Image 1 (tube, rainbow, N blue to C red):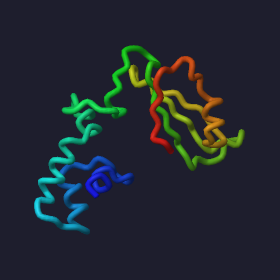
Image 2: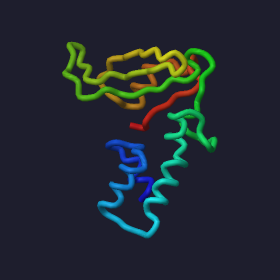
Image 3: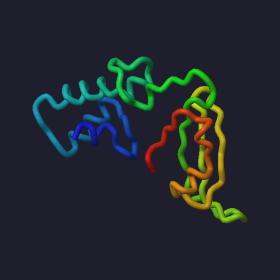
Length: 131
């Protein structure tokens, strides 16, 4: 329950107060606020966004590239008007070292088409939201 309330897909990684309010609207248990507070403070993703995480863990926020294109994140922009070439998606790549963003117009979001759109040999690490 704590995980779902804190890492909600519609507004994930809320702070202590918002996570508590969301839980409180449907649940109650003694010590709930303290449990929420502890859970949020121990969230590796939240901590990595605010500096060094207290506990090292396998979190995308812990990747610190040392050169360009060592780690690249990617995501899609969807539901765009259809282009003359039939594209309705944009595949976005962001170099996590420099912040440089590249866009590739796409007609689909299939794994096959994504694999064809990227050059894996130049990238050591890829991050995706699994969508």
